[in-house]
Length: 465
Ligand SMILES: Cc1cc2nc3c(=O)[nH]c(=O)nc-3n(C[C@H](O)[C@H](O)[C@H](O)COP(=O)(O)OP(=O)(O)OC[C@H]3O[C@@H](n4cnc5c(N)ncnc54)[C@H](O)[C@@H]3O)c2cc1C
Image 1 (tube, rainbow, N blue to C red):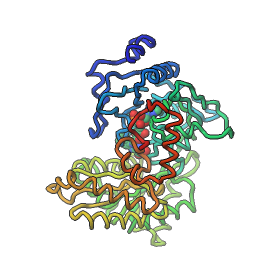
Image 2 (cartoon, rainbow, N blue to C red; image 1 turned 45 degrees about the horizontal axis):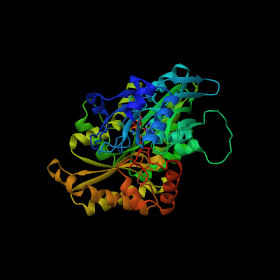
Image 3 (cartoon, rainbow, N blue to C red; image 1 turned 90 degrees about the horizontal axis):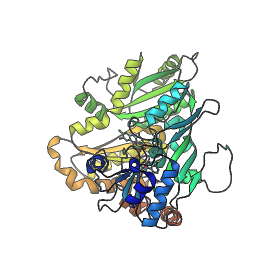
Image 4 (cartoon, rainbow, N blue to C red; image 1 turned 90 degrees about the vertical axis):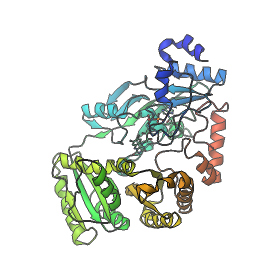
């Protein structure tokens, strides 16, 4: 199959040098390792279609890969070498960017930061952003329905994709880039491909919705008594302004870890609080004094007893310093020792109580652990992390991690939540999805997979148990 691809598409489309393949065979955290005899690297949709047809003919599974920043081992091939990596990184053109319709047409391999820069140059903005913005690709973001820190206002990828072009497992090309605002011809193939993690086809290009560029932003750090108080603050603000787009919960324990391990960080507030919130409010209107608006509202929230204290970043450098604290939590945890991460969601209104109760339950069941959460409270999505109380207890990870994860997943499922809020299933969570997925959902997912990919050539062993 590899030589057939080389023959049809030329040497540029095939990499077989093992030293060039090796960096793409493990995920960025080094938890998953695979094998692949080659990396196939098409430069156009037609070339992708040709590769998929050859893969079907030779019954060789393909593993689509963008920036390989998946949190769940989604882009790592099986370790038996039975599949071939399909890198989308050569398809890296922004085909068009139309300021009138506010639509950008980007090929799957365009890096998120590149698209954000292109939108910025046109006086616009692609609002989705996340820590991997310098490496992750538009195709990968669509295929994982990625979220990030601005979901509260703009939604995840599902809300920001206006259309998708993709090669389906039989080699046919689905073109959803027609720009139709209304189209009720039945199932949405575009939406089916979003979050499909490469199991239903190869995304080759995406039409993305842009929004006006930010004229100003206000960033605040707030101390609160509990996650419930944090949610009350969000509701208080939302009732009075529509500008809040970032609302990140941070436990005091997480803040202390960052201050201890990340050089140059400082506590934003002089007072101590059990929980903190990072708030970002933005405006596209240069006349609006967004800082004054947020400051007034936080003053009212303080007087009403909703919050304990608050400070507004006085300049961009301070705003960045606040965000750096939030973005460094995982790094600080790694510096402290091993952390067991769970990307979970429950209904927004239920998250405060869930967070408190689930933390207590895990700490009770596994003495010596600390359970806590941080992240996108306004989306009902928390990164629920469990770690040891002291470095000397490192052994706990090896022996207890699977049981802790099972308990967390059981608690989430019992609360009607999701064991994967934004990172997807990949290979990491496939067994848990099989164990806990609602039967109707699992049945429908398997039926869709069988119908569209009867030969099972698209990203086997991922997502669909
Ligand atoms: C530091 C860091 C921070 C992150 N923060 C967040 C966050 O806040 N929110 C969040 O949601 N996620 C976050 N992520 C994970 C996020 O899911 C990925 O960054 C991104 O969505 C994947 O893009 P990628 O190009 O790297 O895809 P890859 O990792 O290469 O692939 C991801 C999955 O998509 C499939 N795929 C890739 N390209 C295609 C394609 N063209 N067609 C079909 N299938 C394809 C792969 O087979 C795989 O299943 C973070 C990751 C890192 C490393």
